[in-house]
Image (tube, rainbow, N blue to C red):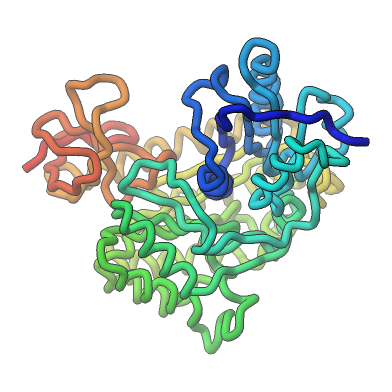
Length: 459
């Protein structure tokens, strides 16, 4: 059955990217291909002939947001210029078959491994040559430095995706199903893209993947050897030598594969930030085992001890899940005490919920929602105290801050981030005295401390 012909007169496009930074990079690659083909970006959806929503379906809230966003934008097929409404990303990968029946307003579904085909697919739609709506296959693609990419982040920072997919197979996670098996980019490819980004003004590189610690195991010479991680060490060493980069930040480095050679490199580096996102998920051994994590609470604590010993002042971010099936009160206390003992600077707490298609759905002894909510509140309050206590250590110090521009609430203040604050997810440094342009790195004396933010003046 041929899909209805859609003719684009001015090749205008409106794009919405939902979910994580990894999804955002996919969106930026799609935009790069579209711009090369002559598409212009509309600032408002009513002005666009093509509307694309790059969706997320990691948890229930993300699914709801994706559907609501698509339905809201679908109104511009009647009230605007929209000739084609496209759903791409994880939601399309996971549910294209069902959504094709339930949401006829969507003209095309593109999976997580087909997004680079956006231009030929739109051309085929224009020519009436599409014989189906859904283009969803087993994900195998990952972009390289040769793919065009339009960096929609602030000009001074960028996300650098080092790999795609995941081999870890945690029982609560749907990502391997949505994103496929691990596919790593070569070190040369990543260094070249980093150099391209620097040429556009980027000073901060944030290294992202589903699992940083598995980077390169699918490449020749990858994986740990004699307690060392040569591929990761080479990547970080090479990126550190890229002229023009000031900060390189590492995300999603799992504790079981965090080796001392990488810690030592971070400790002596002038560019790799003293910041590490290290997902732990829990501290109780029984829960970790049911999660299919290759680690124990004791190993996690030992890695944290080593990090703090080797890299004084390191800022640690992690994520945990509360209420995992079978989590007893004793398990929860181990989690709570683990959080208090580790003193993470930044902590994301997720309430467990069944995700269809994951092994955890079949686990017995589900924790009631009331108990999950109560445990969440205890963790939240404990972390708020920890964050405020750790922030106190900045009081009176002079630190380097990357200025982001005017404060989001008032033009009388500036806001920025120090090296221990990642974009979008951590706190801010509020500057109430002095002036600097967005993208500048300035020295700021911290004069006040809030729960999650710092306040200071340029010196």
